[in-house]
Length: 395
Image (cartoon, rainbow, N blue to C red):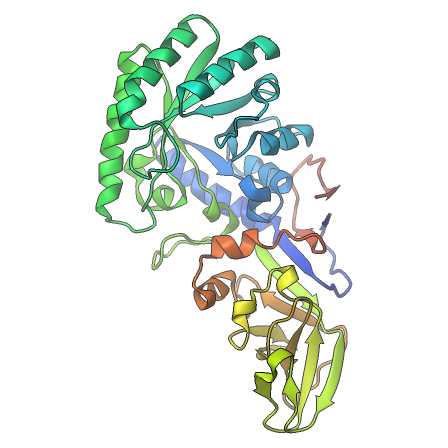
């Protein structure tokens, strides 16, 4: 995927994601301000290539806007950011048995530990890296996915305290993850918070002095009592609101663009695309747009989507194909090369990623992360960051 920073209007694209860097900075400034009000730092989560927006560019923008940590899922993601020049505090948490902890430790990347095996791997990495490992012990408080089970927590804490006393590691934090924070008032939130408090207290009683972090985007927005020392917003960084009905001035940063590649006048009674699921009721103008499910347009949107073209929303007719969609323009004038907005922030009334998600029964997280495609061009709009050295890159 090609990626460039620009403030100029590009030539008509075949398939392009525009990322509004200024929107990301405003979103992070808002989130960091909420955290600072509780005395907490902010970790901007840029896993999955920045939720499809570009990890390096998002990390640089987030750090310039008030984030002090960057979070990723994997060691490989962390090392790629280090190679790109991101020097901030960095944390990764989802490991395979083959992950190279030594390289992560040598690069100053904090590691999550959920089991004795992972702790042993981290201690072994210290010997290879020649420096102390920074460890975040994860307690499973009720998501029942990753993390140490409560029954095994005392033994893990004891082992970590011994390793710290031996000078191999420093337990930098205790952390967990909420299951239902996007549903304010859900009883599991307080239950998880209580379990988290108990686990953190056990670490302190063992002689450790860890930071505590629990809050994701939703809890950052709705539960200041759970900000603790550090919050970890992810989807909200990109301007997508995880809490239905909550009014918050986040701005979506991603716009999906294409252009008209062919215009044709079709007579009444002509059927369109595979399966002939739609037939022209009258003579009409059809615009061909060269994107499809290979570019992140869900096939399930067939017959249920619209695009912004020539100043208004227009229906996509017939099935979404691998590489193409067809737009019914009626008797309006459209031209080859005209811009097509498949989704954006919604300012002009164009479709949004949330609308796509609602239509196919998923979440907007899946829509935007699904935009990282081999033939998709990614273009960055706005002020990159003062002194940013990542203005132009391949990703």
